[in-house]
Each structure stands twice: as C-alpha cells, then as structure tokens.
Image: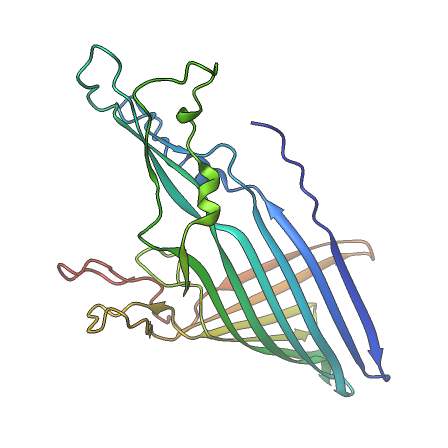
Length: 315
C-alpha cells in the first residue's frame, strides 16, 4: 500500500460591522484515515479457520469533509453578546460497503471446506450535516465584592443525512475458471473496490439503534453554561444539556413506501464542578476540582432493543 499525502487547507475571514458587530466566514477541508478499529475489526486474531476470511480494504480512502461556516457576532449591550452561526459539513467516505469474493476451486478438488468465500469492506457513501446555532452570552459580571457571574446559552437546530445502499448493487464476484494466458497477473483476482463509488443509493437520516454510538442526529439541542467565581479563588461551574431524542424506524410499518421516522424521548444532563485554586506567587499554582455528573439522576434513552421477537432491556 502506497503512502497517502493529505492536503487540508483552511481559511477564515472576519469583517467588522460598525463598532459592536462582526461578520465572519470560514472554510476548512479535513481528511483522516479510518480508525484502526474499522481497519482491523474483521480480523479476529485467533486460530479459528475464519481467521483470514474477513478483511477491510487496505487502500480504503480517507474520511474527507468540507466544512463551511457563516455567522454574525453582535454585542447588543455592554457585556451582552449574541451569535448567529450557520454551518454545513459534507463528508465523503462516511460509511462502508461489503464486497464478497468467491474462491475458485483448485483443479482436482471438489471443494475447500470453510475456504470458499472472503468478505471485504471498503469505503462507501457520504453524509451531510447542516445546522443553525443561536448563542447568548454574558461576560462575567461583578455582583458583589469578590463574586462574579457569567452565563452562556445556545440553541441548535440541525439535521444529518447519509447515503444508504439500494438492493440492486453488484457486490458478489466469482473468478473465472481459467487465468488469462496473455498476462502475468490475473486481473480477475482483484475485486473492483472502486465500483462502490457508483453504487445506487438513497438519502436517509442518521438513525438510532441498539448501538450507543448511533442516534446523534437530533433536531434540537440546548446548552447552558453558568460560572460563578467567589473569594479565596473558588469557582463553581454548571453545565446543562437538553436535546431531542434520536430518530428511529417504527416497529410496525403499514406502508412500505412510508419513510416517516419517530423521535425518541428527550434527553437532559446537568453536571456541576467545584474548583479551588492554590497560587504560589504569580507564576506557580495548582487546582483541585470535584465533579458531580448528572446531578438530577436523569435516565436518558440513548439506544434501544432492536429485537422484535421479544422484549429486551432498554438503555
């Protein structure tokens, strides 16, 4: 496998509007190799006969995203500011596709038990994320001697869509019975990984499932951050998040052409931090902090049992 060289340019432009506002635009291209988990998850690393039967394409393309952001910042009153930010992110090679290679049985053998088929994964598909965010912030305000309060609150409306394959793509291949005598390399032994770039697909929202890493496509999200500074270099911070539930398919679908999705329960989480700073002179010091997460003990549904054959525990 040859060496990959990435070029990730970025540019940002900001321009004042009067004396209390700024308009800005930014673009960034980002590329990253697939996580090692995705490269090696099909290699089970033991001595079973299926040890070498599942692969990930070693020349898999990098995950590439083009990020655009446009916004306005405005200080509408001394110490008070508001931001309006619109963003879009187009991600290539977001998902994976599976290609199947069927071995040719060597001459003189009727079959090779357990070695008739290999499975390969390669990159496929895209995802598009779009959203608009409104942020209200208050710079730390002195309310009494030694006590300062600050707040920042934001609301985001967003949607994330990805490509899903149709059932008409050719992904099962079988080698011919004989090699081509005109060439030194049998080209039929190489799977057409590039075919996945042209696979037929349709666009759908990213949905929740029984896996906790899914379900991040949530229409509404609100975040509140409060900070309070007290004498003796003591600081208290409160961070709260409230977001709509993940999207998921109905269990019973009366119309097979219906693409309507349901929304799971709203999630909320509130964390608090108590921090004390110890200073030694002007240049040395250390902090001690104490965190309490989910202080209200909220039970959030972040995944669900997809087995329709019987009841199961919810997460």
